[in-house]
Figure 1: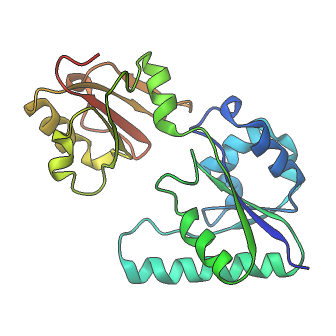
Figure 2 (figure 1 turned 90 degrees about the horizontal axis):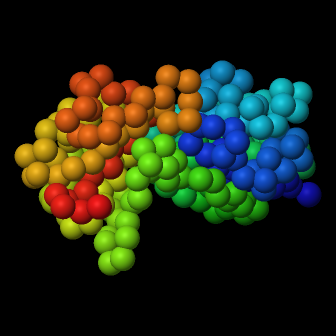
Length: 230
């Protein structure tokens, strides 16, 4: 009988924010998969190890996920990932694919999840705490109240008119796009904040859009609200 694949959200960075369910699944699984050539040196592994020390005794398999938008490169990488994962499942082993934050939000895991299930194997998602919730808590701010709307936007793609949407805008993985996004938001009269490496070593909190520097890393989120909104 083939094994089961779990896409496990390890939360935004602090191991204490991992769910009890995620800890149990990682502890019980035979194989740990992580998105990187060396799984034990990935951020997701380091977070999980902080809550589940037994992970160091597990069989580990790296899943290479290139940082590119080239559809052909991504298609080939996803196909190779599925081959690697299904080979593990064919051995009757259960596998946990570690994912930062929540596997349902801009996660590379979703691509392999669909293909693994499409190939006839069982795969389940173990949700985690999304990074933007941890960012709001770290800044001591709420995201939405009353009838306010919440928009989650991938900042690494052209934001376009989405920055002018009413309500709260969460701009994920700001990184190199941070400067342009910051300046556009300021031009719109928005207010907001940003957090870099939330819950991890080197965390930086910027209490206003004006404070956001030009050198934000990939692991950064900007939150913006309309002028006058709480």
